[in-house]
Each structure stands twice: as structure tokens, then as C-alpha cells.
Image 1 (cartoon, rainbow, N blue to C red):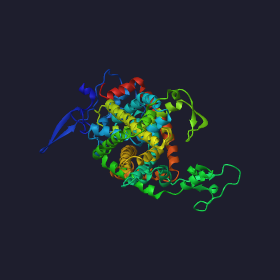
Image 2 (image 1 turned 180 degrees about the vertical axis):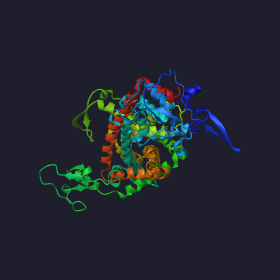
Image 3 (image 1 turned 45 degrees about the vertical axis):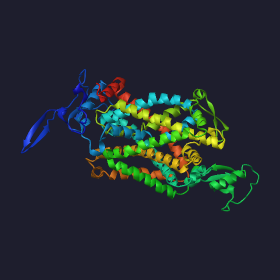
Image 4 (image 1 turned 30 degrees about the vertical axis):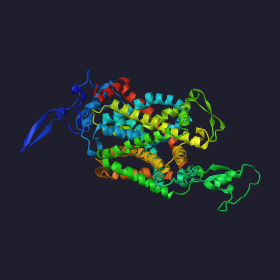
Length: 599
């Protein structure tokens, strides 16, 4: 079966080799040079059939090959026997071409760690626990486990197979199947760029808290009752519109600045005073953007510099940072878990986390506001199932192109199914285990404040930047545990940000490489590997400044909800349909088997 498996392990690093065709030795003085004869290198496939009609062209290696299904001008054409198209992909010598230093993983372990770093990020710490809280606790685990089994893992295998089988970026990989599918890849590129824009801002928040934790006493954000104020006012500098609810003349006590409450926006402190007087205050949101927060912009640039430096190093040098940035957060999670479960009241938090409410999976429920009061609106039961599916796409990084990019740096002999299972399992276990640590601390906070757990949980980023910091302030050594937590959060976020940004750079690099034959500018950019990451960081970083103003939380909620809940799910389903449509169900299985060297 050796001839069926293509080149042996490491053949991508050894261009050609003994299996690459007949070799002849030419002597030149004291040097022997092995010259590879121009003999097509085609793996032996069972049941040889005549090739389907198609134009004969040149592969990137110069060998004559028939057109891959759907390639070329004209309509979208697939061969009568789609398995023949699969064979032609593996017959193309470019599948075995040498990869440059910055485009090949040094080991399978490095690839697995890098993939786990992409999947496990900030969302695993705050998004998953909050999704459980909002969707019935342990009841959310049922659609979550079904989604990871039926959607997450199969699509993870598919994207890994596309990248490793073609050795190309997302656009090139889907374009190999059919040129018109490049639009689906560019849609994933757009989703990845949108997430990267605001993801860096969230990391700058974590960096701000990490710096504030470096104190001998209690950090400012951990002082009892001060956590919401620190995040909403110090970090975001929020403003509120306060108005008198009735037509009667409103009281007119002056604010410290001499401005009446009902004439415009007020600051956080004034908002509390206005509420005491009976005013109704609403978040100014998009109506009061304000100027750029200079402190936040500075931290934003620091985070971008760290990510940019790691992308510069390439995959061989990146392994040293991965071996540090990935294991350390798990050490911190374990420490936070054991500290959390030993706190008074941790049992109530874990009970809330683990007690299922099966009814909400099949029956609509009434929506509650932040005070726990019904709003009169009904939430369909199907929303829980959609939330679980969309979270799987977001958590594993599916549809963004990261998996295709990272797996395109793999040699052809890496086991796809095993790697996919390891990464998917590590991601899910991290989320579930992190939920234990989070809710045990929330149970302790609820016990200290004399309220129930659902009254201390803040939505979205507030869980991480309001509820948990307040809990740290009630613990012994608050600065130490706060430092550990935000250090873990920053490391997890940076490892994910590297994968997202690397996918963007790889996609643009491959496009410029194709253009370099006719464009001198493209050739110059590609030949100087440091130019492209800088250009991409500018193109992605400048729109990210939009999230460095007062309305950052509203913008992040808007973009995150649109991209993660809708766009990523659409891209994932589109990839399933695209591969099945181009090759057919039978040939798709054959393609996977060939990529796994089992055909």
C-alpha cells in the first residue's frame, strides 16, 4: 500500500524524493547531482476508469493534468465520475511541493498546540458560562453536546482535510474545488476580520486589568461595590441620558458641573444620583460616541504589537511561544478551580451551573429584564438550539479560515481525524471545566452579598470584567488571584488572535503570490515577508479603533451577535454543501479517505 499513500512522512520538506519519479545521477566534477525526470507522479487508485472529459492544463509544477472539477472558464462543471477529480488533485505534483521555513510546522505536537490555542480563547471563559446561565444551566449542555458531535467535529475534520489536502489558504483550497466557491472563502475572511477588530480591544481591556492588578493592596476594580463603576466609567467612560418620567416639572438639583439631568448625557456618578431622585436613565450607546480613549488606544497598540511580533516569527519559531502561552493558562484554570470550589457558597454556584431545566428546551419562555422582571416578550425554545450551534462555530473557529490555514502547513501524513478529535475535545473540556471555576466563584459572591446566583451574573463581558473582579475583592490576596485570572485571559486571547491574524495574512499572501508574475508591486511585497503583516495589521487595526470609544460595548455586542450567531453558521453550512455538491457524498468520503491515506 505504500504506493497508494503518496510520499512518505516529511516528503513535503524533501521536494520530490525516491517516490517522485525515476532519478538519474549526473556527475559534474566531484559533485553528483540527482536530476528528476519529468515523469508524472500519480498514486495508484483502485478501479482505474477513463478520465472524464476536461481540458488539459499545467499544474503549478509544470506537469500536465486534467482540469480539477469546476476549474477553467465557463460554467461550473463537475466530472461524470467525481472520484476522478479527487484522483487528479493527488496527481498534481504541487500537493507534494516543498514548503518554505515559515510555512511548515516542525512537529505534529506544535500543530495540535497551535490549533488548541486558536480554538481556546476569551470566549471559553466568559461566553460559555454566560450561555449556560442564560439558557437553563445544564440544560444547555444537551444541545451543546449534540452540536459538537453533529456539526463541530465533522466540520473541523472537513476544514482540516481541505487545508492539509490542498496545502493552500482558504481561498485557494475552496477555489481548487470550484472557482466560484472562492466567494464563500472570502465571506469567511470577512467574518474573521470583523472578529479580529474587536477581539484585540477585548484583550486590551484584559491588559488594563492585569496592569491594575499589580498592586500590594486591593486593586481598584476589586474594591467592594466598585467593579461595575470601574468597568463602565473608568474603562469605557460611559454616558447616560436621564429624563423625568412624567409631565410634571422635574426637580433641578445641579450636578457638580452645573448641568440639569434632563438636558443631555450625564456621567456614571451623576446617573446614580439621578436615579435616586426618580429620573429614568438610559445608556447613551451609539448616540454619544465621544472621542477616542487614549489610554485604551495605547493598550490596543501594545496588544497588536505582541501579535504582530509572533506572526513575524513564523511557524518554526512560533512553537517556543506556543509552549509557553498555552500550558500556563491551564495551570491558572486549575488553580482558580480549586480555589473556587473551596470557597463558602461555591456549592450554590455549581448547583446553578449543573441543574438542568429541561422545559426550556421544548417550551417558549418569558423574557426577563436585568432586574429579573418579565418584559412581556416570549423567547422561542429554538433559540437555545441555535445558540448552542452558533457557539460551537464561534468557539472552534469554524468558518473563519484559521483551521484551513494552519492545516495547510501540515505534511500530508498527519492524521486528520485524530488531530481534529484532540483539538475539539480540548476546547470543549476547557469550556466545561472553566464553567466550574467561574460558577463556584459566582456562588461565593452571591453568598457574600446575600442574593441568588442569577442576581450577580452580569451579561456578556460584564461577567469577566464586573462580576468576577468583585468576587476577587472578597477573597484573601485579591491582587494575586486577579493577576492570575487576567494573565490567563490575556494568554488565551493572544494565542487565538495569532491564529486569526495568521489566517488573514496567509490569504492575502497567496493572492499576491498569484499576482506576482504580472505585478512587480505584488512581487516586492511577497519577497519581503515583514511588509505584508504590517499592512494587514494597519488595515484591520484602524477599524478596530471604532471600539475604543464610549459605545465600545454596544458595537462589540452588535458585531459579535451578527457574525457569531448568523454569519459563521452560514459559512459552515455552506462548506458542507459546497464539498458535497462538487464531489458528491460518495466522492467526498473518498476524498477524506485519500487524504487520510486509507484509499
